[in-house]
Image 1 (cartoon, rainbow, N blue to C red):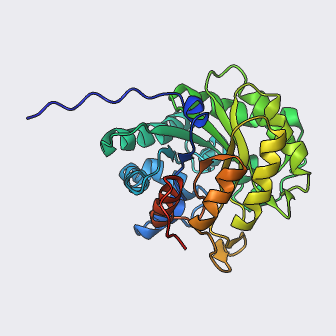
Image 2: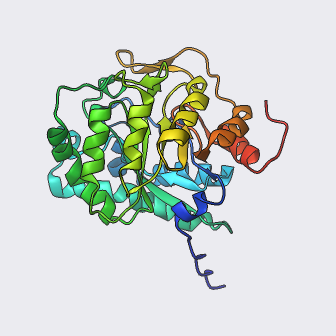
Length: 313
């Protein structure tokens, strides 16, 4: 039996972003559903942290095989409050939060590819916890201090699990962004901050210049940008982020379909295409991938676009 080769040294993600763009993965939930898993649950993909962890590893591996360099754990909908509603106590919930990072790391180790790979711990907004679509509205009626108290405990657990980066994602509101940036202080893990946007503003209606400028004030932030928005929103948002954020830009839109919170389903046409990627990177995007409804086939096209291969639609 041949010995397992030692893992390659992993440079810092921030250091690599200073040199070249990096490929993110796509939507975790759609890959799980494509494999036959029922996610019609308030915990969404986080349910599988307890029920079927191997399914999460398989989903991460599919994106790594497609060319992703960063895989994001299943922590988006995972909160102490959400688990408590399912009768899961704080100690067990903390274990499941850690597992979201550990399973992504396991996939990286099992992938056995000859390139550096990184693990991001997903940190969804407060609005992901009630599972009522409020992450696409923001303005929860909570103060910065209240939101910081909500986020800090799970951030501490996720940071302790050893991810390469914390993905503060689908943030709808400048108020929540301020809370998250306060909550990550002193954790010792870099973060990216990405907003969900519509009509050239945050989902709560604030100017993007105001939203992205927060990144310039936070030393923990290695990238700022947008996710889970329509692909048509990305180019303009990237230009604003590159101008005012003072950091590399992250961009991973959804397929272009819209989420119907009442029906818990996606509506409208899918318009995501990797042909737009060179324009995004020219504008300043350095972490590029997809969010909901963007699968391994599209991420393979993104990887090809970032590698300079032509011919995508």
